[in-house]
Length: 351
Image 1 (cartoon, rainbow, N blue to C red):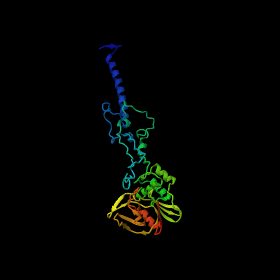
Image 2: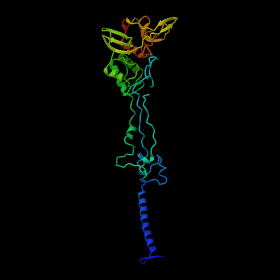
Image 3: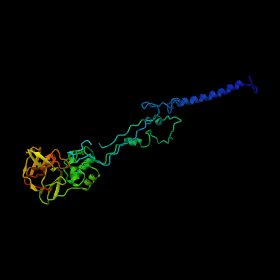
Image 4: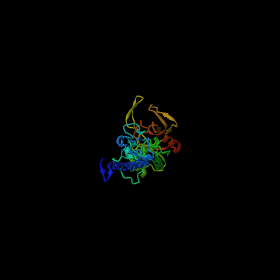
């Protein structure tokens, strides 16, 4: 054993050991105090890189909202043009029932447990906590998640909304045949939209895009051809029936007249033609009437020349489709009978 300045060297070793143990003990005590509430505990060095806490398990003291990052909502944008959603002039009625607003749903995203946890690894990239973090993920994620997907710019069959009610009221104010403002785009509203599009020379698809909405906003309505008395005007070119009083159109109704094709009935060939000219109601049937040529049923018809009548029908497309009669909706025919009148002798002008 060596002696340094008269003191054994093993005493020096013991003193150094005591100092080291004292320091380690202080560190252990501090670590025990820090870990007492479980705040900000780091994972063991050998598992931190491969394990992360379960979303259902939160460490006491952690912000529950920091366990997962909210997925960003990304609703799909609707197509700016609704092509093929409405009437096809080679089909029957073009109702477009049950059509999708093309609205999309947010995509799912998995949470990054390490990035969302308060106890981040020392070797992982981190941002300085400036006191503004609320545990909701990236800026704007929570707001985007809470926002509803944008509605499509157009309005079409099947939508139920306040803007449909606003449109219905506007159409009613302009004299288009609308009996109910109920916020629901159904068949009656579609008939009125067809009539508006016809009056404005627009594509007849029943979809309310920019052009159709502008026509409604601008107050597009057809003009009467007659100037006095109560007259039932039938515009063949635009496929409209107008209830006119002293030169003022009081009601505009979607209609469908003869399609110009030939057909056979009871062994005779006919042409589906609606004659133009000045006529008058000469016969009316206040019931469902079956065609004598066995061509189908007519609701409450008002005949104005030969076997040609204005009558109600369950199918009134945006284009000519009849055998020669002028179809309107059953509810519109009820209005002509019960509210407006048009008894026998009422002038009917077809142009």
